Every structure is written in C-alpha cells, then in structure tokens.
Length: 372
Length: 91
Image 1 (cartoon, chains in turn blue, brown):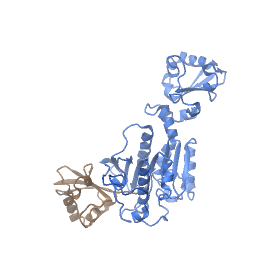
Image 2 (cartoon, each protein chain N blue to C red):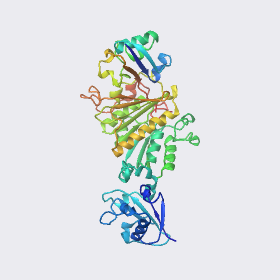
Image 3 (cartoon, rainbow over the protein chains, first blue to last red):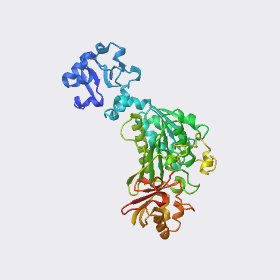
Image 4 (spheres, helix red, strand yellow):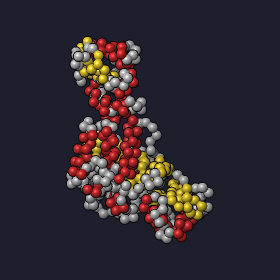
C-alpha cells in the first residue's frame, strides 16, 4: 500500500486532473518528489526557488500541518494521507489557513485568480447582515453561505407561511409554522456547516438598528416595506457601511449598491409613496424566480465588495423586467440636497420611520420579515 | 416629438397594462399630458397638484434622473427614451 496524495483543484492541471495520486512513502519530501517524477512541473507549485515550501502552501499529513511536525522531513507510512493545500501567502498562522475540506469545498472559487486562497480567507473573515429572511434574503443567504462567508447575520421576526414557499428558498414545506430564523439556520448549516449564522429575531427599529448593523461590514436589504428600507439606509449610512439594495414586485426587480458618500436610498427616492399607493408582494404578487435573479445579483455584489474586485453596482440602478427579460441601467447620483448624505444634512440620527412612511406601527406580520 | 416611454411595475396598470408606449411632447410635462389624454388618471401618479414630480416616482430621460436636469420641464429630443420608475419595497 502506498501514500495517497490529495491534489487541490488548481493544481490538477499538472496531474492529468487526478484528485488523488498514489506514491510510495518515506517522508514528505520523498512523496513530493515522487509526484513530480510522475507529473513534471508539480514541484514548481509546492516549492519556491530555494526549494522551500512557501508560506501560501500548506501540506497536511493525516490532517496535521507539517509545520507542526517535522516539515518536509515528516515521515509518512503506507496508508497515510498527504494533502497539498494552497493557503494564504504571507506567513499566516497555521490555525487560520484553509483546511483541506474548505480548500476542496471552495475550489471552484479558489481556482479563479480574482479569489485565490487569500480571497477565500477574506470571505471567511467577512461579516454580512441580511435584513429579511424571505424572497431576497433566501438566495442572498444561501449563496453567501455556499461561498464561505464566515458570518451571516439575519434579521427577521416572521414565521414561515405556506404562501412563502413559492419563492423563499430557505424554507421548505416542513418548516411552515417555524420561525424563519430557525428554518434559515438549519438550511444554511445543511449547505455549509462552517458558516456562523447570527440571528436577530426582532423587528429592526430605530432603537436597535445601530447596534445590530454596527457589528457587520456589509448590509444587504431584503426588507419588504418602505419603513424598514429607509431605516436600514439611514443606519447603514450613519455607520459608514456599504448597503447592497434590492427590491422586487410583480415581474420587476431593482438592484444597486450604496456606498456612503456616493448616494443613498434617499437620493434615489427622496420620499416614500403614500401608504397604499405601492402595493406589497402580498397584495400585488411577485414572480418567484425574480427573487433569485435580484438576490443573486445582491450576493454577487457582496462577493465583489468583500474581495474588492470588479466594478461595483455603485452609482447605477439596475432595472430588471422579467417579462421582456430586459436589463436596463439608470444613473444614480448623490443628491447634494439629500437630507441624509447631502451637503447640509438634517437627518443625523435615526427617526420614527413608521411616521415618516405614514404606515401603522409594526404589527403586520410582513414588517421587515422579507415578504410575507 | 415622439418618444418611447417605458413604464414599470405598478404604473403599468394606469396605461392599460402596457410596459412601453410612445407619446408626444417637447418636455416631460407635455409628454405626461399627452399620455393623460389617452389614459386619464395617469398624471396624478407622477405629479402633484402644483405640477411637480412626486418624490417617490423617478422619471429618467434616457439614463438620467430628470430631478438632476430640469424636472418636469426637461426638454425632449427625437429618439429619446423616458422611463418611469416607482419605488418598490418587496423583498
């Protein structure tokens, strides 16, 4: 029997796409030499010019990193498993390196140069708050969990209703009657047990919003009412957080990203519509799959923000019409007259958003629950 | 001046369920008046009694918010496209 060497996805182009290579034992250096003898070029990946294992490569023998053992001199015996895992460059502590399970789980992301193992660790360190565990919150939370975003916060106080299941991916038939947060935690952990899911089981209001949002770097809006949307906007701006906004109704979707100082929801819509003018999804209906389109766009923008890649959806309002399948883009600017982020702000702390929106105080089950 | 007008979401029901229509006008206000003649009740969705655009409905000339131009008096040119966009709150 030989030693089995796990080859990470990004390195498999050197090993004829083999995930595992069987070689004879000895020590780690001997194992690596044996792999290189079969697949020339492999050692360029695992050694630097001085023929040392660089800091961004971790090598495990039976799930133990060799730095904690005898380095490349660590003995390996028949039946042992060796894993080569590209991790963070720059002398990361071994405890924060990606473990073999993570490296394999996220390999389709890690293999992309825009992500790499550094980016994957940035995702793991990221803390993202999602307001509403409903139509939009579902795809956002699921894609962030799948991507390995380390901490996903969820705000919701609603209970799963049968009418939610046409679009809310976090919840299944057996979850009807459970709280959306209980259901969401189970779903997200089933997808990815590495993710820490923090639940905030209360309506977001002026007294708790700053404290809750303050713990996160990025906020995703999946609220289902105007009062919560203005509240989240104001709190995110006052705390200097990036807000990834999305909204849906009927066959339509809107998405944009607000970065403090580059426009906010009040710049886009200075005032809420009078109560009753714009119906809710419960009143007017909504296409289930549009939540997936808009939520996926929001999750993508979070991913780009965390990794600082690409061109963010800042200063642009993306409009999606599912019936014509047209995507249009409108300019979105910071309004110098904006009461929140303008030149002479008058909103300098959170206000009474129910009064602002002319809506009744929170009692309707839909309030910020993400689509009842 | 005939321009294409895209109508989003809940505004569509005020123009017989259409998602786009063509209308005539030298300014946004005239354009709204032209649509109002065919679809009574349309105007009040967009402007208040004083003729100012509501703050909860956005009107874009091509991709620019007319609030940052001349509002309802923004002039139109041949080939322009106007989009009317109410805020959505669904999540």
